Image 1 (cartoon, rainbow, N blue to C red):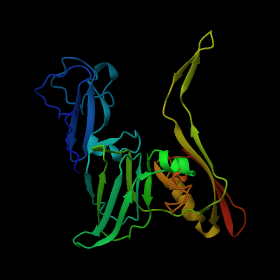
Image 2: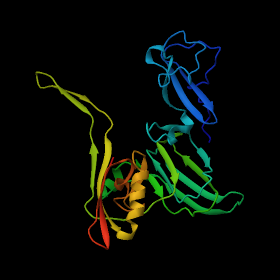
Image 3: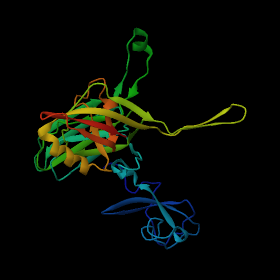
Image 4: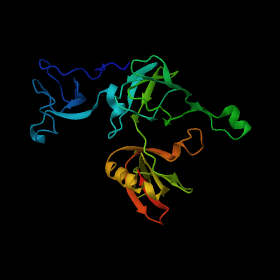
Length: 295
C-alpha cells in the first residue's frame, strides 16, 4: 500500500514516552493494525494491547481502542471508518484464494484502475479502467451547469477465478487525496433473480429537538441505507440459499441486486450490510421466493 504505516498522526506506541490524555498511538504487528486513545494523563509504560478498556475493567484502563490504522480502515467492515491517501494511491492485494468479485464503497476519487494477474505470470487476466465523475442530466440547462458528482460505489463480478490472484488497484483524484470507505474482495454467491418493486430506503437517526416556542434544534446523524427485496429462487438452489443464510448471520456482506454496473438502479441496489430478515417462501416444486430486508 502507498499509505504509510504508521501515519504521522498515529505514532507507534513507545514504552519510554509519557502520553497525555486523548493522545493517539498505533500498535502495528503482523496481525494488529490498531490505534488507541489515551484515557489518562501522565500515561507511561502501559501497553495499549494489555491495558485497554476491552480487556481490563474500565476503572483501571489506560487506553481505549479507537479504530484501525489509516492503511487498514478500508478493511474494517464494522466501524466503517475511511482510509485517506495521497493521490495517486496504489494498493496490491494477494488473497491467496480464488475470487471473482471486488467492490468499493464510499469512494472519493476521479479515476480507478484495476489489474488482475495470476501469481508468477506478468500477463493480465482482467483490467478495469473507470472514470468516477458523472453528471446526471436530463435537460440542456443541466448539461451546461449541473455539477459533477463522485461515483461512490463500484463493484465488478467479472474477475476470472484464477488460483492465486494478484490484484493491483490505483486511485487518483485531482484534489490530491482519495478516500476509500470499504474495500471487499471475495467469491460471489448467486441467490436468485431480484423481482421488480424493491424498496430502497434510508433509516434516519438524526434528531430534531423542539423547544416550547416551536423552534427546532437539528442534529444531523448519518443515515443507514436499507433495502427490501423479493428474489425468485429455483427450488433446487434452496439448500445453497439456506447455507448462505447461516453463514451470513450477523456478518457484513456485499449485496447486489444487479450485475450491470451501468444500469440506473445499480447503485441503489448495491449495499454493504447485514440482513435483518431472510424469509424463504416455498411457493411450489419449481421455485421459491426470498423476502430480504437488508441494512
